[in-house]
Length: 473
Ligand SMILES: Cc1cc2nc3c(=O)[nH]c(=O)nc-3n(C[C@H](O)[C@H](O)[C@H](O)COP(=O)(O)O)c2cc1C
Ligand code: SF4
Image (cartoon, rainbow, N blue to C red; front, side, top):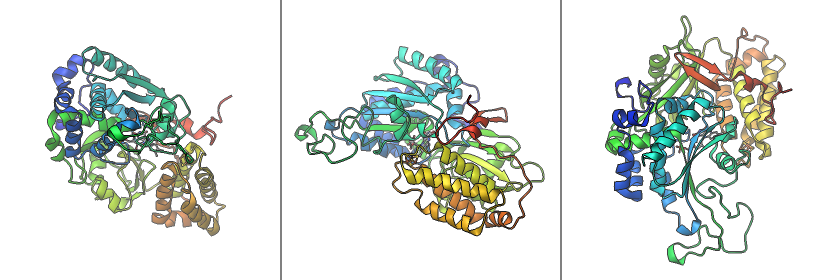
């Protein structure tokens, strides 16, 4: 949809005046001010927008849920998640490079809608180009009165996968390591003082009455909303153009367009904005030129969080419901393509090791389970595996999520189980001593992607399960 590209203008927006004249900058926040907090949340609900951070949760419903919290729950906060740690994605950084102003305006609108006390815009410390662009945008917009009425702080965080997990992100904003806390942000938000675990004999602020009758003894749960960069950027355009415009694109269950990344065994890795509901294979072909000459697509993954899409399923609609119907998921639309030279045991090992290394270990079944599954996959790949190893992997996959605080081990379950289910012949080839020809497997944890050239984080291979690096002195 290049002529209608909304989130990725062809020419990057480099100043506030450029944003105002070329992109209708500032119209969205004015409209939100006119609609008021409840009206703004309703507008987003009507648009049908679903969160682009991976889960696809309806944004308007998230905001309305927060608005329904009693005042006794404490202050409210809004967080923009720009951690972008999902392998295969480079869409948030592309959006920030193309136009950081639309993200700041969307965050200001979210803060207005939920009547937040403050807002935080979080990116990784290593995203230096985006930090520079955002800093200028924040300064210019605040000076022009277009950054809303609450303070927005730019937060830079570490290069760990869990920094992007919303409960880990809140910990990082508070100055701790990004280890997910037990309760979700809307129950236990930023700077909350209410207890998270255990039984409390005294009345708690959360859930005890509302309005004047609420009991509040000083313990605050501070309900917080976390939204992805792309979600908030799209909010800006929905407020400017109206919810019907957004509903008019995509499918009834997946309205709108999404910024899609395509990397892996393709001619030209790319990022582009695509209307939802189009066949996945067509999108891959259009953005990246498809597989290299003489090759065919064997498998496609949406990040490392969803079941595999086989090469013969590429007519599946690129939508939440379309991909769910074949046991996969849209995630954050970062597609990693493998051609027919790929060994799916090696791919499973690569993904499983990433999840094992990035697991924080607060939940034993997650850290030990992902670790064990990784080592059994390594055995099979090395040609010393047996049927018993495959069986043990199957068993660990059923328990890896026991007592999980976050979704990471569910990702392990979904992606590894699907590979073993859909590509049994690749496993059998290793067990029977017929390994495929060797080739290179680098995790698509993207550092940069421009002009058809992708740079991946090769250092990830040296990262160890305690988050140190084997190549550190
Ligand atoms: C392990 C893990 C990593 C995640 N990483 C990111 C990330 O880098 N960026 C992001 O926006 N969401 C990420 N998420 C999803 C967030 O927890 C959260 O659902 C999202 O930011 C909500 O925004 P949305 O409603 O706009 O989608 C991650 C989730 C998990 C379980
Ligand atoms: S489920 Fe895994 S990654 Fe998530 S908090 Fe528990 S140990 Fe950490």
